[in-house]
Length: 467
Ligand SMILES: O=P(O)(O)OC[C@H]1O[C@H](OP(=O)(O)OP(=O)(O)O)[C@H](O)[C@@H]1O
Ligand SMILES: NC(=O)CC[C@H](N)C(=O)O
Ligand code: SF4
Ligand SMILES: [Mg+2]
Image (tube, rainbow, N blue to C red; front, side, top):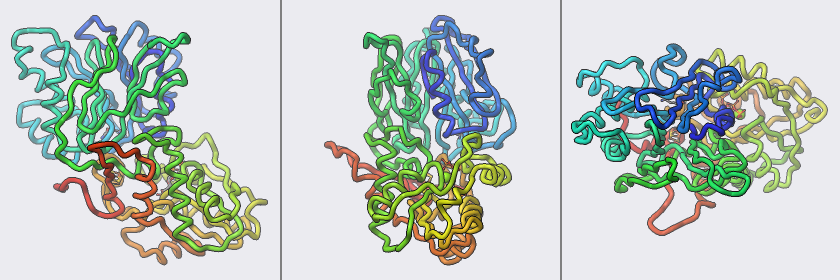
């Protein structure tokens, strides 16, 4: 998600958050009922090309989205590709949604019974339609006024929504960055600076890694806040009264976010390192080397090695032409990605007792493949150390594990998992160890205490889930 024409590269940086489809929608700041659209299935680099990017020329507000589907039909339908564009009573609005509405089924019924026909079965379209309705019901619209400021309509929409959403909402001349009151998904804003240090553009993104090097990180959008970005600058325009405990997704730290992003004032990389250290403190293993499963567990492995005193050695090579396996939309694609993704550094592993660190075991596909590869290459022992607790429960808030059927830890004990993946031992970071590693570096300020969703690890959901 982003704004500012010069910063389209930022979407490429966020390719780790979604690889199924990609889209950009831009407005020239003058025409209220026209937007330029580029959309397609596949990776951002395949959808947004040298040839078609010129369609965004002359636009002053642009939003983009890389989709990781968590709702609706997983792959099909170009109409599921975000950003969603709706022509409202007062002009065009486009939205990009990160997250998943826990009550999408109910909301869908409500929207349909209001006489609104939907063109997809995704949750994000519902938000677009709810904004369109709030606009139509607003008195400004009845007097035929300009679309201009829609803070009030967005606040009305937010009050009718449950979790989880981080949104970018674009009108013809401005952009709103919005976070749900639980703060479940990250969202931050920045200023792009010219070489002489003046503001050149304003940018908002799920993760700060999408900001260009010449951008200044301004702040994270607060849970329940609406922040407006326009030619005039960045302004907080509304804050929902806090009435829910915070529930930032802890899995963002474990796996999802990029190392070079800043979340809750902390570098994601340092949190992962801390998790590795805590895991070593909870452990008493004797081994020769610490290795890791590339990519996202590298920092945890470095932390584990530093704390345990066991030397870190790379044991696997990652094929950089293959993307993340976990975010693929089906198991066949995930298995294929794993097969192509890793190579063993044979000379490093022969006759070694290896501590193999990964950030998570979800379906067990990765570990089953890798332990065999390492043993076939001559490793003496392979001990798995996982920098998060067992993933046992489904997620309904934006990570695509909708049932526990596929979660290995929901059906097998730790010794059974060890046997299934063929390891010599398996140990996970404790829930308390993870939460304390995540919360240790968060700056405590008045009236703020951090809160994290751990539902997929503990079964404690931040809201009641109506299945
Ligand atoms: O138990 P599984 O179902 O196989 O899933 C867990 C694995 O998937 C993720 O890696 P992924 O390849 O998605 O991304 P990464 O390269 O960033 O680590 C995660 O880091 C684990 O390695
Ligand atoms: N995070 C995303 O990429 C979008 C999620 C949204 N729920 C969808 O399925 O389209
Ligand atoms: S259930 Fe897990 S993945 Fe889903 S929001 Fe909570 S911590 Fe994140
Ligand atoms: Mg991984």
